[in-house]
Length: 430
Image 1 (cartoon, rainbow, N blue to C red):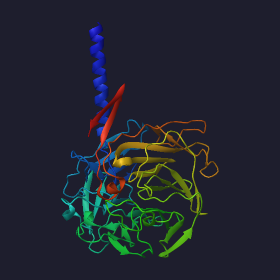
Image 2: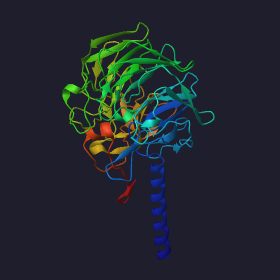
Image 3: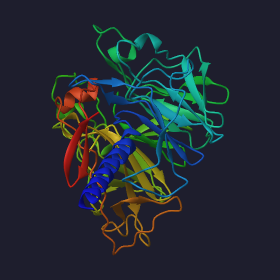
Image 4: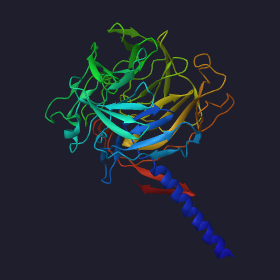
């Protein structure tokens, strides 16, 4: 009988290990990917991922979905791979590209990005990739006159006409198909794409060249650009403060008038950063998260900008925060910010899903000390946490050290490990 109990226990342990490993394998560790929500489902496209060779990463053309129509725990999010990545009309392996939802809410477009030397010949700035969720197919649309290939740019859906999206900034370098001997070119151009007629329009360029920044278009058609790099930082070079754009000299773009302006913010100005995320909340405030700082190290802080007064606030976030990160994605859904993947300390790459939830009965600025919390659960109907709760999020998937953070920012070099804990930590290499 004792032997039977022992055998059963061993079998249960093995099954538990297998289940946890499989669940984690559903989402490859990703950095520099995109996450677009169509009809309640998040589509996670591309990004850099680890290889079997130590200290290397490569862009991928992977496609995962995360169903946001059902509740889930962040320890086992309903992430599933989508077939069709090898379709001849699907994007090549890319990272640091952009994605924009079309006005039908059931299809989205992919443009730009960089890749490895094996695939740069497949990059074509005159091609827009379109994914149709209804029949799980990719198609392409050629647009002969448009922006130059770039990565680390931003794309925002035009709030006054959602058939358009605007791209801004970015960098042209070897990963985008430029000559390896050529000096990388940081862009300040703005292009608008009509996703119904599939045409590009060359809009008003900004006064500042930027990449690895964030951009949010407000409901009035004004875009706010935050952070990023205004000078090129080579792969092997450490970060320098003068390369970072100011966080209190904020760039505004009036997409209706086609005019740029610079305005000074006040309040608790965030530290300089790049590779961060920005979302527009239900209260029409901008919430930024993460990125990396002037020391090249990842950040895990959260700041809120009130666009109406240009005042920065640093909220007190309850719960256990996930590992600091950059080049992650963030989407705001029913007062919950969903964070997927990203790069962390020592160039680790994460395969986790984290949720920052609004606290019931609070407003972002009046309740700055208790408005948000990191939680274990996502609810499609909105938050359920109250002020008295102090939940904790799971620790993100652990990863092994690789090169310094500056190297990942431009070349993406890492080795990822998965931690499986059953009584003790068992490390399994991806």
